[in-house]
Length: 209
Image (cartoon, rainbow, N blue to C red; front, side):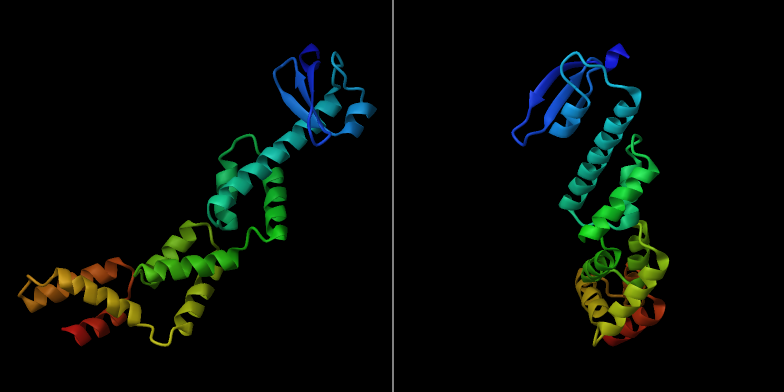
């Protein structure tokens, strides 16, 4: 128990108190906790109170980790959950609590993330198959992925415009290829590799070649 003895206090500007323990751990308590538990220098923290402080500390750390990740970029719930799980000290109960908090604040929204990520991938010229794969790799549920891709496809007045633009760009790099058959093959393989279906590819290639 000696290692849980308070060896140093630091009164913070916001009124809270930082306690340094003999085992090098630090906890921040509010004035009520400080006075009610008599946590002056030399006081030993009981096991029950220590576990309470330790749980609050981990919760604070988990919140900070989640906030830092979301500040850098948007995440799906599954993706954020996986990254928090990589931090071994966070229990699943703690992670779920933080995820629910982030959702309630509006910082975590799978539908909004899916819509934005789908549009981002489409602008890069990826077809439905690759878009679907990449979205699921980001931790999005398969049902939501299918729904978002369908909505995005239906919202486009000319669904093949992006594929046509991509094919035209690729053709410029194939200008030295004089064999039309080989040019079609190379263009087909390239577009298929970007996740477009054979039917869409054939329509575009027939239009260009």
